[in-house]
Image 1 (cartoon, rainbow, N blue to C red):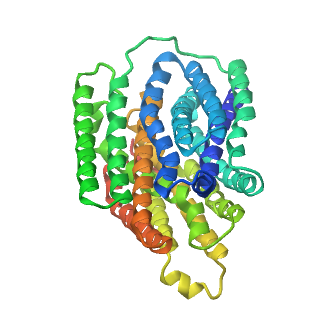
Image 2: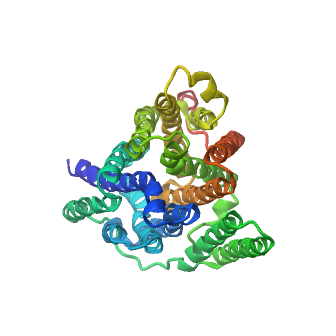
Image 3: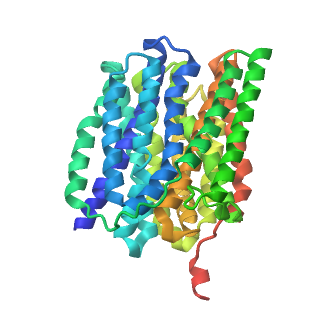
Length: 459
């Protein structure tokens, strides 16, 4: 019974993380209005969060493996809760961006540490437990947008951060009472320098993209090129450091492994598409289709309604289906639905018979089904590469997805900023992301296949 209570506690932490992420997406247009901020600066409230997660998640995986799950998880809960309070009190867009950075650092530990905890307590059913565990995340995709839309439309966006306070305190008390740390602190070296170089690479890349989007001139092009050079230099310094580091955040032997590289390039593409499209969907609904703030949050509900059952069913069928088939089917569904979301012929053909809300709901439901089919298989395919280091591998997987998310948000922001109107901008962005997803499907054949029922008969 104790392990199921622990499962519920760590899953609730991920639920809080999910609620906050999706609720902030609904509040994004309000940041522009209340702080009189440009689209580029307001987008940093989302991008900086992904950068913080990118920087911290692989470290949290290593810290969890070496210092103990309980200590790392409690510290992260405390930081996430305190920074949520700071976000709610932010006086301007710059303070909010800074507070979101610290909130991202706190939230970075939830997925790798909680995955390690679940793996420790459910070793005999690791695949099923982790699949069900990650399927809990979309519940926040139901609660967050609806709660966020209601709060923002009735009160203030600041209350979407206040709701984290009671949840965080309850979870800290629960973990203190229930969880027994099975690992002794080992004081192993943590690669903070590697995380710094890696974060610099992403940050400089985003600075370069934003400069191009803000003012397209010869001067900004020179500055953007300089930032791109700094980004590339940071990548080289990161790789050089990881070769010498005794306990690197990224084992370069894995990088040279084709399955690992393929899996995480795919994670990069998935993160760029799913995170960017999800983050901007409320803005798309309000700016292009003129829906209300409340409806822009509610419109995200079908995504989670599709993700939850699809993820649960796929988790139970993984041993029979393997990993590749679900990933290919899921990615194809997501790519197709994103392509159809772009303002274009579909809206003119079916717009006369169905409302905007109905069309968007069906397309978002399809994308949710695709994500629910893809994620359990992709998650376990990564873990199979090094099952004895579940938290570290989960951290790396999450790192690549959040790097993709940060870059994807920046790309979408720049496309919108350079477009003459939101309709044209979203048409170009959604078409680009759908093509990118389709082009990534061949990578699946380089990843672990998983064992099917037929294969096991011959073992």
